Amino acid sequence: MNQRSNSVEIRDLQDIVTPFGVRLAGIYKRSFAYVTLKDRLPVILTKIIDTFSRDKENIIEKYGENAIEEVKKMIGFISKLKNEIATNKTLKPMRLVSNNSNNDAEEWNKYLIKRTEIEGETPLWFNTVWLYCECYMYRILAQELVLMNYIKTYDPFKQSKQNAFTNSLTSIEILCSYVIDVIYSKKNLSIMETKEEFMKFIKFDLWGNQCDLSLSAGADVGHATHPIQILKLLDEDILVNNSEFIWNLLRKPDKNNINIIDIILDNAGYELFTDFCLAAFFIAIKFADKIRFYPKLYPWYISDATINDIHWTIEYMKNASNECLRKFANLIEDYLNNNIWTIEIEPYWTGPYDLLGMKEHDPKLHAKLSEAKLVIFKGDLNYRKLVDDINWEYTTTFKKALRGFEPTPILAIRTVKSDVCVGLLPGVAEKIFKEDEYWMWSGKYGLIQITTAGSCQCPINETC
Ligand SMILES: O=P(O)(O)OC[C@@]1(O)O[C@H](CO)[C@@H](O)[C@@H]1O
Ligand SMILES: [Mn+2]
Image 1 (spheres, rainbow, N blue to C red):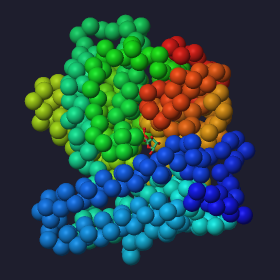
Image 2 (cartoon, helix red, strand yellow; image 1 turned 90 degrees about the vertical axis):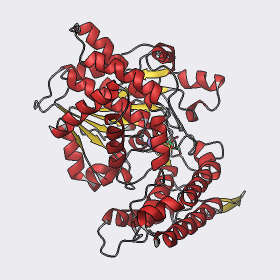
Image 3 (cartoon, rainbow, N blue to C red; image 1 turned 30 degrees about the vertical axis):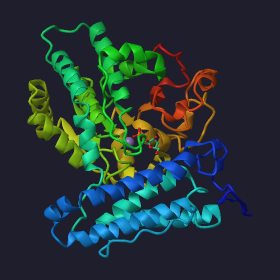
């Protein structure tokens, strides 16, 4: 039964209301989902149109004269998409590549049919699950590009991601010099000193996640504070810190002695650099013999790192004027050349399913993650996929919110940028809401949350 109210149809809340809680959707006017669909995605789409228009000459230079027609087609497509969101139209099937080479787009069309069955009608932007339609927007944009003849490899977010790195260069150089010193430190760190450094590297990685172009709706971002000095000040903004559990887990050699740590990446730019720092530290203190990095297959949420972004970052560091950056780049290249670090291309992260669906929809990837001693999921979008965008009770344990997805211990390193958060001590969320009604949308607060911590809910400022 549909009731019309303020142009957003309230329909049967199939699959929005779950036994565990309500999934985020644009029908909730006080939610970040509503703000995102109503205001933020239109701004992001407008910025992509502006990028295509501004980049026209470079595109013609790189892809040839014929590319201009395809730029016009993309601008037309994006304008239409913007209007469909604004007027709460239905989501459409994606056009497929004729030789059907990219069958992951077909997965999205199958999923649209499944959602239509669940919801009783074709999903509407504001009525369907926010996680689904927001990912759908980035995937159908990628699909339209893939279907072009000339500009199929164009990344409309490339310049923003590169700016996110160069805008953070001062912080990156400070952090790099610190990392090089620790990794090559002449002093042999005692076990306690190593543990102290470990806690710091996890926090560097956490706060790297605040640099996020999706959150800024495409406005340039950069890390402007002193990454080491700022650390202590930020401790009070860490709502869950299971670093002690992570330390105890990683200190033990893996059951099968494979010693792999998987990092499911989030943003390029400063965040990717902090991922490199954490991964290099894990190798230096022998917490892992191998680190597998999982970037996105397509340009995603503006900031999210693709393999091209990884290579660009390393290349930039190799040619930097700063000696530390060059030294670190050589170390990274050495890791990659010796397969100590690998870059894993998996379509799952740009597919339609949340993480619980992996065992069914990509059993090979699930088995691969099971090999690792730890899988680290970076950022807010990955967190939303871990907990299925359900606004659980804030005191729900992280393990319960994963509903059985745990191929191996799972660690979320995430700053809070959407209306889902679990594993908090009673009263913590309510206390912060009193200070800042929109605290869940800002990225100000962070979580270092591991499934092996079980129901441990350490108070702010302490690790448990
Ligand atoms: O995954 P990330 O980069 O930490 O954050 C992604 C994000 O900026 O995009 C979505 C809102 O558009 C939210 O999940 C979050 O605010
Ligand atoms: Mn991101």
